[in-house]
Length: 227
Ligand code: B1M
Image: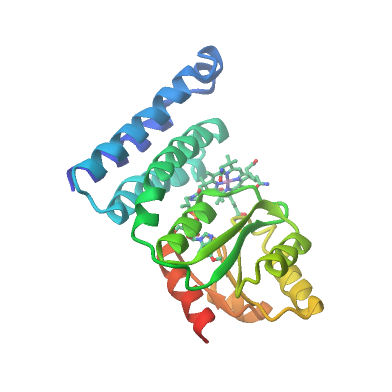
C-alpha cells in the first residue's frame, strides 16, 4: 500500500524535529509537519484508499514507531506532541468519511479518558469508529471525573459508558467510575480500554466489557447495547 507507507514515513519523520527547532520557528515547523500528514491523508482518500487502511497502515503505524522511540528515550515529549498533533490532523480528515459510512444511531455511548489522564488520541479514534459503526457518541473529553461520566449518561440516556486510560496510574479511576454508576442506580453498561488495560483487569474491576482496539470497541459496544 503505497500511500499508507508514505503516511507512515511522514509520521516517522516527525521524530527528527528537535525542541529547539520548534521554539525557534514559533510553531511554523510544527504546522508544516501537521499539514503534510493532512495532505497525505487527503491524497490517500482521493486515490480511493479505504479509511481503515489509512488509519492502520499510516497513522497508527507511524504513531507506534513514535511510541517505541519515546520508550527508548530516543525522542522526548515535544517530539511526541508534534507527532500527536500531526496524527490528529489526519484523524480530522478521516472522521467525516467514517461518519458517511454510518447509519441512524443504534445506541448512545458516553466516551472519555479517565481522571488524571490527558491521552486522547486513542479515545478519539474509538469515538470515530463508534460513530462510523452507527452509534451516537457523547464525548466527555480527557481528565473526566466519575461524576462527569455519570451525569453525561443520565443526560443522554446512554446505554454504555466507555472509558479510556493510557497510564497505569490512572487505571484505578475505572473502578471509581463503575462504583459511581452503581451508586447512581443507572442502568448503563461499562466498558474499558487503552494500552495498559486488559480483559483480566476488566474482569477484576467488574467492567461489562473490554476492547483491545478501536475496531473491536465497536463490536463490544454494539454487543453490550444488544445484550
Ligand atoms: Co504519554 N505515555 N505520557 N503522552 N504516550 C504513554 C502512554 C507511555 C506508554 C509512553 C512510554 O513510556 N512508553 C507512558 C505510560 C506508561 C504507563 O503508565 N504504563 C506515557 C507517559 C509516562 C506519559 C507522561 C507521564 C510523560 C511525562 O510527562 N513524563 C505524560 C502523562 C500526561 C497525562 O496524561 N497526565 C504523557 C504525556 C503524553 C503526551 C501529552 C506527550 C502525548 C499525548 C497527546 C494526546 O493524547 N493528545 C503522549 C503520547 C502521544 C504517548 C504515546 C507515545 C502514544 C499514545 C497514543 O496516542 N497512541 C504512548 C506510548 C504508546 O502508547 N506507544 C504514551 C496511539 C493511540 C491510537 O493508541 O491510545 O493505545 P492508544 O489507543 C488504542 C488502544 O489502546 C485502544 O484503541 C486505540 C486504537 O486502536 N483504546 C481503547 C484506547 N482507548 C480505548 C477505549 C476502549 C477500547 C479501546 O473502550 C472504552
